[in-house]
Amino acid sequence: MSSEYLVEVSHLKQYFPVRSGFKTIPLKAVDDVSFNIKPGETLGLVGESGCGKTTVGRTLLRLYKPTSGSIKFEGEEVTEKNIHALRKEMQMVFQDPYSSLNPRMTVEDIIGEPLDVHKLYSNRAERHEKVISLMETVGLNAEHATRYAHEFSGGQRQRIGIARALAVDPKFIVCDEPVSALDVSIQAQVVNMFEDLQAERGMAYLFIAHDLLVVQHISDRIAVMYLGHMMELAESDELMNNPKHPYTQSLLSAVPIPDPETARNSKRIILEGDVPSPLRMPSGCPFRTRCKYATEQCAMAMPELTDRGEGHMVACWNR
Image (cartoon, rainbow, N blue to C red; front, side, top):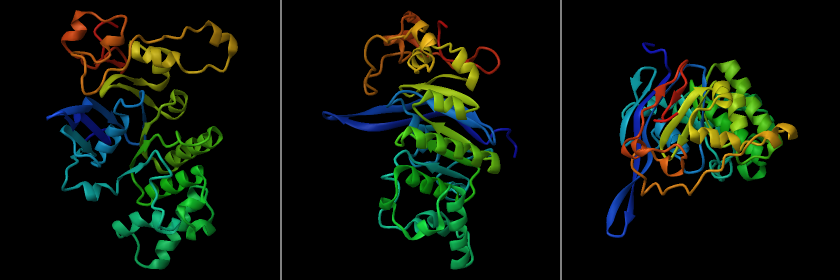
């Protein structure tokens, strides 16, 4: 492998055409995002709803065709032509365990489908064996194989989705809010399972989530997105303890603190105004309309993501 990175994303843009009256205008879901992921690393991706996190994940796997920019996997450009072969290396666990599983297929067929697509068995007995082994890996019983998805709880369905992603033994998995639809007690089990699988198999994750504490727990580095732009990227503990971007600071101030004494003394940063519409974005930095540090320069141009020391990247003119 020529590059030290498993996944390299540079200047990724994903615009969706939206009809507005008689004209079509672009909805800029992802606007010039760049990042890298090393083999075996977990990059957490956080931000509020509608900031483009899921779109980034789906575009990496070419579930959406990128508007522009490049995505490389093991140094090779991901294109329409080679994506079928690369799907064996790159998989996705979807957010909603209720809608991402086919209700007409048994669990064995759901988990076995990637094996069918990539022809990874020589006979039915070997396929059955592989499926049962995958089910045991994610904590499901062998007798569940003949059941249908509707017979399972949310946590069990998510495990079926994870087993399906693991079926082709990928090197990289996009985890799109894999625990947000689950109860808190089940969330911990699923997150721990992701960590155990990573330790065993050495996979890299792009872990997309709302919950900053979950992300801090599982991630090596964390990236913060706002309205299609990447605002900050740093080592997990560094970002949580020393946030530099005003948006990251306000996000972290909203995280519940279990210690009442600390919670009373910590100040919640309430943001002014509303989130702008992605169809009518402010010029320059999209966060400037809600930022107390905004200056005229912020309206002129979006700041580059620059290194403020030890790989702590921030996109801000004034911090």
